[in-house]
Amino acid sequence: MSSPPYPWIIAVVAVLAAAGAGFALLNQPSAAPADEGAADAAYALIQLQSGITRALETLDHRLGHAAPAIGDPALNDDAARAILADLSRTDPAIVDCTASNTEGTLIIVEPEEYHGTEGADIRNQTIVQHVLASKRPIMSEVITVAEGFPAVVINTPIFTSESRFVGFTSIVFQPDVLIAGVAGPVVSGTPFQVMVVQTDGRVLYDTDQNQIGRMTFEDPLYADYPDLLDAARRVSAERCGTATYAFAAGGQAVHKEIIWTTAGLHGVEWRVAVIRELG
Image 1: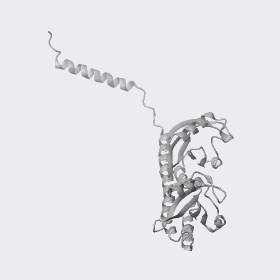
Image 2: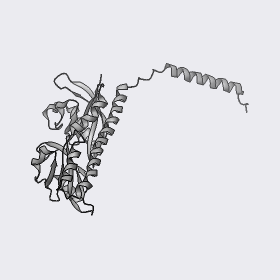
Image 3: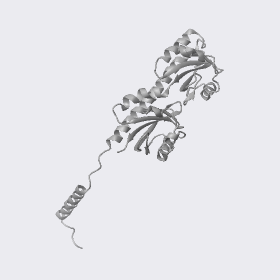
Image 4: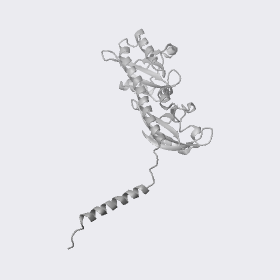
């Protein structure tokens, strides 16, 4: 049997192998540069999601804090009215604040310009039926409210200090105004577009204000763009993701990338998206 190779031969072979590997790496093409636009868009999306979530939770917290104070006057004294009037001034997105009894009748509506809605029967609203049956908070999607315009409503139950359920209190607000207060600072000075939609495709907010309120799957504006509609279906069905599509609003079609995630309150989900043009 022959003797094993000398140790120095083994060492030379190892060095040559390492050198060859090094030259091979040097000859590889350099890595593609990082897509800074994608990274910036992702960072903006995180800020948007956290900011919108925080804004919704703030409304909900303020309403929940007001409810016990409204409960003991049994919905009908000046103190309850003052609480709702003060609450209505806490955010520019708030249209009005209300208190309703266990029959689903609006008892107090503030500010004063909406006093004419008092006495309205709103028990046919799904969210009213929910809060009366479950006695738990709920947020609606966009609905036509008793005041006669589309808005989002947060309801929370009212209990007296003896834990007697006496009705519910509500914040009626404009989602586009709420979202704009978050989106404006986040994307100011960037090339990004922000869009927030319900899972049914209704546009709650868009940097292009002409898009707000449109129903994506029904509006003829989008009918000639199947890849846009495919992306929209994914946005509705998936809580987060990325897609590309082409769209032209009064000009040549532009290729875009949309990245999205989810914000919301009390089980209602809003898809929050950042859109950028692709070169």
